[in-house]
Image 1 (cartoon, rainbow, N blue to C red):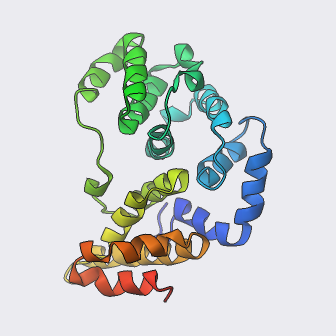
Image 2 (spheres, rainbow, N blue to C red; image 1 turned 90 degrees about the vertical axis):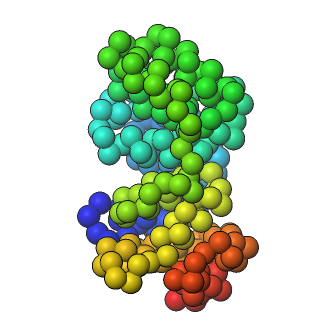
Length: 242
């Protein structure tokens, strides 16, 4: 993920312009998550075609492939499962394999449950901590006493952060992810990095708004929260302009 304009996860939204329906139909036809392609479908199109019945096998697949040992996977997992689980009740059926989690899985999925921040998710997090490896226990005991992540306070300093915010939106279609991305339009004209980041945010918002018109509605309904430096871009995107 090296490009300023649109990086890997942002491209998923652009690809959806051409293939969204067929990909969503593929997700609807899945019986289980057993490959990286299956997992990509679930993460990219869950908000369009929620498949809670696939969450358990997706966690089993992630654990079996040791994906949590890859640092680049951590944020993606948090911003997919966290938003999804925050809208659900009992989560234990999806974590039948948690007794087989290694330290990396214990840490990442505890972070997921902490992000979800529901009574059920925090209870399950405590259960994982109670049975976790000693190398993870100290960190997780500290984590559970910290406040959960507030999406609107996440520092947006790179396209990679835009990526994970889009992951959150694709998972649950919650307005706060769009609004945090749009906040990156509040550029500092004396800072080239801020200008480039604003350009990446604008491009991704415009592209994804074509496939998800609700993005325009979210921006229209919240124009007042943006500073003058972003207002013109927000209005242009909200009105379908380029």
